[in-house]
Length: 162
Figure 1 (cartoon, rainbow, N blue to C red):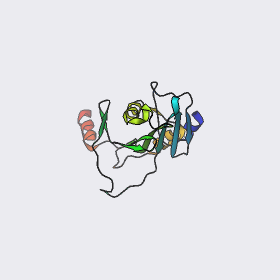
Figure 2 (cartoon, rainbow, N blue to C red; figure 1 turned 30 degrees about the vertical axis):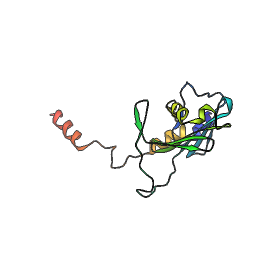
Figure 3 (cartoon, helix red, strand yellow; figure 1 turned 120 degrees about the vertical axis):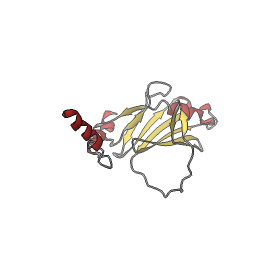
Figure 4 (cartoon, one colour; figure 1 turned 90 degrees about the horizontal axis):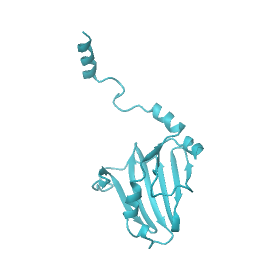
């Protein structure tokens, strides 16, 4: 997967060792987007998507929902039921991510409720950064000139120098 990771221009969110089986994992990179396919036992399928291209919508076009709290951390995560499972969408690192759990049998325990999705979502907290993502991060300039020394800090340095 290293070659696919190096082609990916954004951070790839990966599961840490735990309940997610990564033996058959496959990463497919599209440069500014990726899909991480993680087949599980018993017809359960986990897919993590990342895409740094997204459209801005008018304020109020999407309803505000309270942030979810997973493992004590509040985050804006939108969970929806699909025909064959569940999906969670969220933003990290200025990128839109989506984690899907689908089941061959929608009555499977992993797809009956959003509990399994929320549980594995807390396992996706490792980050892989390939060579193109590192290059993109090096080109990134925060808005408002945040790379410069703040004026107050410069004055404090001058006071201490005398």
